[in-house]
View 1 (cartoon, rainbow, N blue to C red):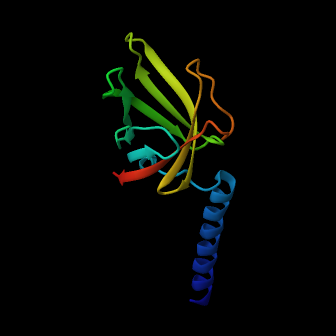
View 2 (cartoon, helix red, strand yellow):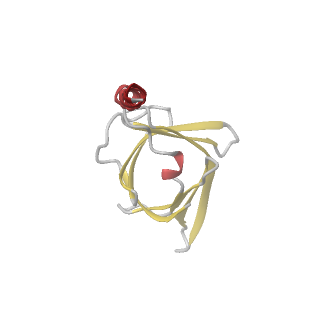
Length: 145
């Protein structure tokens, strides 16, 4: 009986070590996609609302000033892809441009907290930024899905 307890205890310790080794080799698991899901508003000068849905779709609504002093909503939508295995993490927007052509905007993203994220937009020519510099846009979460 004493040997059975030692064997079970040894197997348990081996399992714990194996799990720890997997996390050490792979690193911490990436945040889930739904960390991004919700409504976000830029806090550094830009206007509008960004909505990231759980199904991978997004909508950006921005206020566009018109010559008569009024504003109109400009709505852009499409799908987004997150890749937390990259450093910094990648966030790509897949959409149709105003001519109906397929477009892709490569960005990087980081979360300062569960209520604040920073995105740096790449150029429309699909040049992904490599660092968070002054052109970064900081967003605060309005609602989480």
